[in-house]
Length: 189
Ligand SMILES: [Zn+2]
Image (cartoon, rainbow, N blue to C red; front, side):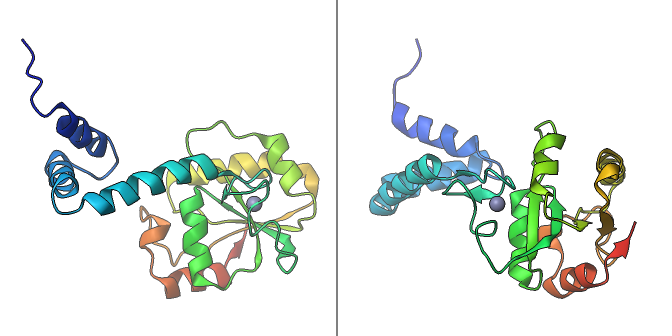
C-alpha cells in the first residue's frame, strides 16, 4: 500500500524539482523552508507565480514577454524602427537591454516553435537593417543563413554581432562590456 504520509510535502518537492535548475536536494530544502519558517514567503511566491502566469504573455509583434498586446519596447516611440535585432530568446533580449546601448527593436525567435516567416516579415516592415545577436554555434549560423535567404527580397542590410562573443557561450554569460562592443562592432553579412 502506498504511504499517504506527507503527500502535500512530497507534491511540493516534486513541483520544485520539475523546474529547470532545481535538483532533488534543493527542492527538498525549499519545500522544507516553506512549510516551516517561511510560510508567509511561500504564500507570496504562490501568488506571484499565479499572477505572472495569468498576466504575462507574448508581444504580438516581436514575441518578447509582455503584459500587453505590444511589449514596452515595441510601443516605445523613441526606439529606432529601422533596426531590428533578432535574438534566440526573450532572455537574450533582456541581456542586451541591460547593456543599455541598443535603441532599435527586436524579434524573438523562441526555441522550439517553428519560425513563422510571414510574422517575421511583418515585424520588419519599417526596418532597413537586421542584426543577428546569436550565441555563436553551427546551429545559429545555419539559422542566420536560412533567415537571410527567406528575407532576400526585402532589401535589408544584414549584420551579426562581432566575434567578441566566444563560441558556445550563452549571451547571458557574456560580460556587459564585451556584449556592448560586439553590438557596436557588428559585421555586415
Ligand atoms: Zn514587442
